Image 1 (tube, rainbow, N blue to C red):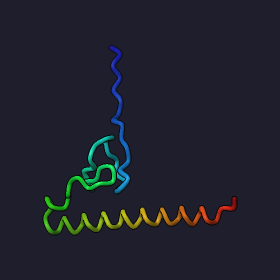
Image 2: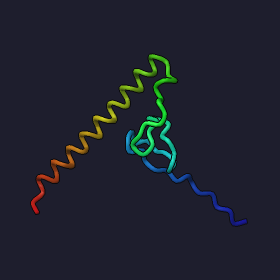
Image 3: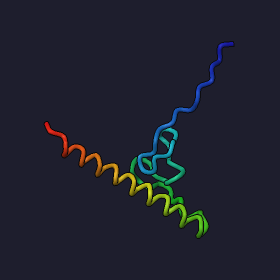
Image 4: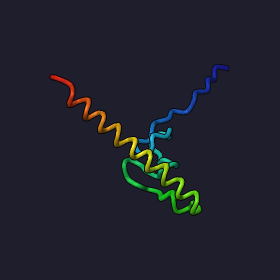
Length: 79
């Protein structure tokens, strides 16, 4: 038999940078194409909700720092 199994094709969520199957909602942050589709914090308990909020906020801060670094690098380049 010539059956070859391939691993799943995964994309990266632009919001939280977690691996996600293409064309699906991210189960970590609940976003799809830049819109919040599922509020993932409503199903969590209070303690878990706080941890999840901290995790999402730290991911957003890291993403903003990357954008700022990119802009600074572009401004330093001489054309």
